[in-house]
Length: 192
Image (cartoon, rainbow, N blue to C red; front, side):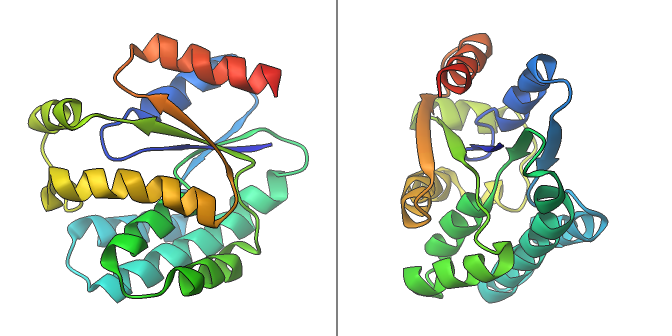
C-alpha cells in the first residue's frame, strides 16, 4: 500500500511520518522531492527559488519519475510505503503557477509516474492563524517566503489535485495535537 501525507509547509507531515514509523517499523519511508540521489540535488535547486515556474515544474517531474522508478515501483506490491508528499503536491504547486492546463498537468504526471499514485492521501489542513504562527517560529525557505496567502491557496490546490488524479483523500485538522492526528490516521488505515 502506498500512503502519502500531504499539507503545506509546517502542517506536520514529517512529524506524522515519524510517528507512523513507530507503528509500521518495516514500512518504506520516502519523500518528494529528494528521496533519491538525483532528487536531493533537484530539491536543493527548487528550494533556492531561482528557477522559472516552468523549470520548477520540470524539475519536480524529473524527481517524481526517478522516485517512482527507484523507490515506489520496486516496493509497491509487498511493502507499506509512507511518503512525505506525492504527485498531489506537484500538481497543487503547478496549478498555482498557471502555466499548463489541468489536463496537461495530469498528462505530464501520468507520464512521470506511470499512473502509479498513492492509494490514500492524508491532507493535514491548517488554518490561516495557525499557519502564520508556525511560520513565525522558523527561518523561511524559498517556497515559504512566497507568503501565507500563497500557501493557503496551495492547500486548496492539494484538494483539487487529489480530485484530478482520482486519489482517495482524507482531510485532517492539523491544528489538533500531533498524537490525535496520528491516531486518526491509524484508525483509518486499520478500518480500510
